[in-house]
Image (cartoon, rainbow, N blue to C red; front, top):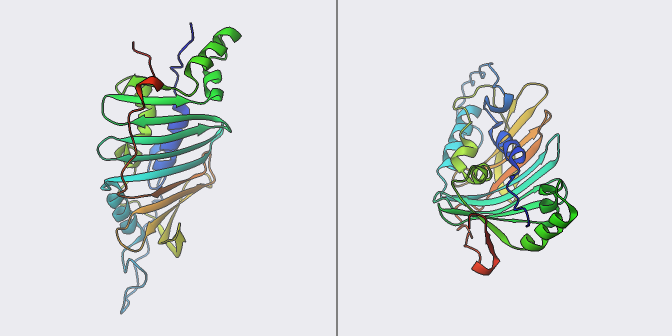
Length: 260
């Protein structure tokens, strides 16, 4: 009897969450700079796209705008100690979510959450074999044969599903951000995927530095977070704000229900 994979890539999920929370947060071992920002000198006209707002005020404004977005897509690229981790997920405020999570070079999981009831996961062969590597060759081959190309359906309330779905929770991704973090320096204006952006950088501990890029035109959304140095350097890019999330329940013939 094939063994349905139940273990989810929770370590990868934790790494992604830590990266998302690294900027201005105390989570994951990161701390904020206690130094107070220098008081701006008197000027006849505020310079830059955000006028005389401090780096901290701009970042607060950006994260508030991002949290209030109806939908967005996050593209994650992390260089973790164990394996590189990548994720590409679209999510909205209604709980819909769809995308992929890749660990290492080739272990990829596709995810669909179309409602609050169930989550559908489709594993590539490398991931399936990793999950049953301690089983006999016969069981491994049978598992791959049964599940390759098919979606595994589990309740969204299942603990394993909840671990994976942490990546689909926008509030959770950004909840560790600390309002009013000090020591955030305003940098140069640049472009992120064709959009004008302002760079704001905060030095961390152990040589780690985090930079958030905030849109300077229209709504001041977070466009990218880049963490350099430390144990989990990487990049999170936010895009497709307000775009519908393509999260549809797979065809019944392509679903394996592990609860049945």
